[in-house]
Length: 106
Ligand SMILES: [Zn+2]
Picture 1 (cartoon, rainbow, N blue to C red):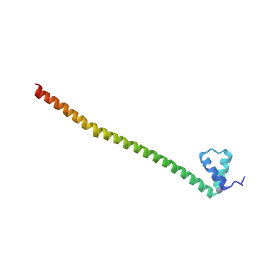
Picture 2: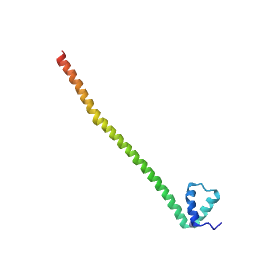
Picture 3: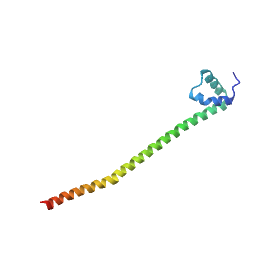
Picture 4: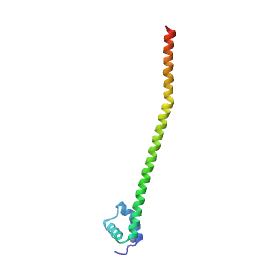
C-alpha cells in the first residue's frame, strides 16, 4: 500500500500523536515518516506546537496563581492597614479609660 499521500499522512499526524490509530494505520504512518522528511518535519512541528500549547497553558495557570497571590496580599494589606490601627486606637482608648478610672475614680 504505497499509494498513501503526504496529505493523508499529515491528516493522520494528530491522531498518530494521540495514539488513537489502529495498529495497521499506525504502522503505515510510521513507515511513511521513516522515508519522508517532509512528513517527519510535519510531525515535529505538530509535537512542538503541542508542547508550546502546554507551556502556554501552564503560563496561564501561573498568571492566575499570581493574580490570586496579589489578591491575597491586597486583602492582608487591607486587614493590616485598616484593622491594626483600629486595634491600636481601641487599646489606647481602653488604656486611657483605665488610666482615667484610676486617676478620677479613686
Ligand atoms: Zn510524506
